[in-house]
Image (cartoon, rainbow, N blue to C red):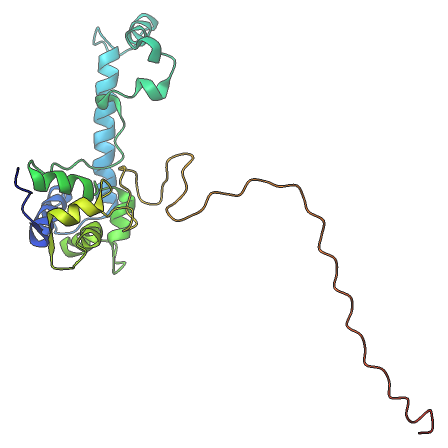
Length: 228
C-alpha cells in the first residue's frame, strides 16, 4: 500500500504565502497595495491581448485585415461565433489575478487548492488595520483561513485524514473563500452564495388574511342607571 502523504505544517504554508507576497511586492517596500496588484494584473492583461493580436496579425504589420481575421476565425471551427468559447485557449484569457507557482509535490497540490491568486479585491480584504497596505503577516492571516478550517484539531498540521475529510474544496467554501478561482464576493452566473436557499418559485397571490375582529369593548357598568 502506498504511504499517505506526510502532514503539512502551517509554517511551511506560511513560507509559501510569504514568497507570494514577495513576488508581488514590486517596489520591495515590504507591503502590498491595491494599486500595486492592480498594475501587475493590468500588465499581464496587456501581454495576453498583445499575444492574441499578434496571433491574428499574421504578417506582423500591426494591422488586422479582414482576411487575417477571417482566417483566424476559421481556425476556431465551431467556436468561431462564440467569444466565450474562442477565449478558451489559455493564452487568450484576460488575467484578473496574479498567477503564482506553488511548486510541485503533495504539498504543492494542496497549496494550489487553498492559496488564492492575488487580485485587488483580495488585497483589500487582507488589509486588517485599514492602512492601505498589506504586510506579510496580514496576507498570511487571510490566506490561512482555509488551512485553519481543514486543520480540524488545530494542531498546526494538516494530515492525510483531514485532507480526506476536507474534500476537493479544501476548506475554502467553509472559510468564505472561493474554490473556483473567482474573486471574493463574485459568484458564477446562476449560483447562489453558500448557505443561501434558492428563491422560492412565484405562487398565485393568496387572499389577504381576514382582519381580526375588533376586540370587544368592556360593557359599561349599568349598576348606577338601573338603580341597583
